[in-house]
Length: 553
Picture 1: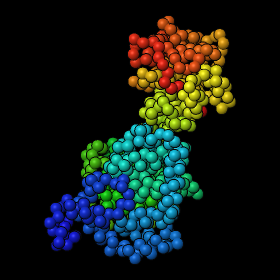
Picture 2: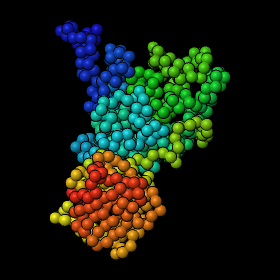
Picture 3: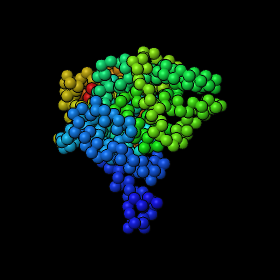
Picture 4: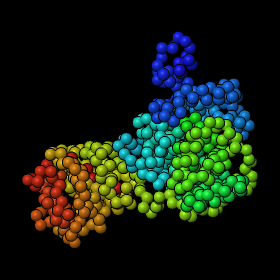
């Protein structure tokens, strides 16, 4: 019974109550982002987990922690290296991370800086509404695919993770491929506040980018597909060198059953061994990775293969290899042996080398040319027509080349009693608007919401229609639809002082607005794929409630 941890006076506690109370008193996550239910599943049992933590506290007691926290340079401190390899007790995680990467002590300033940057990036969009349109820096497009069994976050933590990923994407827009980033952020959020996590991941990325030499393996991240392939090839070559007998036997067996060795290394490295060990060992591996970089992962993978080679050579099919190794890792009873094996050899100049070879046949399921463009729609003012869902819906319809652009208000009709076409045309001529895409929104008194996207703003022409390079009509309410130009008609736009006509089809215009932008008509229009903009198909006229026109640049 776990209740023995609390003394005899608490023997009436149920097993579950004792578990939860023990974890609450000993865990110290410092954040509200962790899901205890998810974490408990990966602990074997909370009792086993806490007993292991108590052992670590004996090995790395509070006086050692205090000594490390006061050290001038914790990275070069031999006591710290020894402690990370033995294991840092979990409730010191936040303090040690703060010391390692010098998180500012002034929490108010740190939080203020985070909020200011948050507002700069997201502006008037609530990140909750961005859905799965999140840059994960990997070949997967959903959170569950990216995190796998490393997803120990509750709903609040998942929102925080997505926010931070967006901020990282805006900080480092040239990152092409780095699937470890979301995994490290999710792990940091278990122990740190949101603003601390953002500071830490940004620091780790900067350190990896500033690595003076790519020759030796001391970095945490690489940021392209080819660089990540080099990491895997470097391990394969190093493993051959440091364990020629083991690798010879292992390669021979894996080759015989048509298993690609690099797939195993990819599964280990790019998941931080998430499916191989319980949370206690994952925490230790995480600390080693944060402290020593990718070379710590080399040691662990080497130790696994060294310890399990006799079992692996008995596997009969390629499909069994990775599940079998994962199961054997979870069955290990003495994890100290695992880490002793991994750290039993010295990384020499040769086998600590970051090679230039690439695993050419490794497929990350990633096509850079067809990879999505991630975007946060931003408007320079808060729209009085559009809700977040409307903004996201229209942005999904936009061409990829302009999804990352911002929307700047050209004109709105509701600041005075009535709008004015001539005034709007004059605004469209301004240099800051005249050369860019524009988008018009009309909200009617019947709550229909529709508009048009144009390759350039409206250009007043007294008598003739003209055809823009690109245009499409759309509706956003009651439903989202896109209507592209479907005929080779020249009757697309007519901009006169007394009216604005869009798409003069067989039945009439798709949209016509009067001089004051207060009244309009709309017909089913063959020029725009038989567009129907009004929800009441029996009507052709409408009253404008609000009108907004934006430049997209």
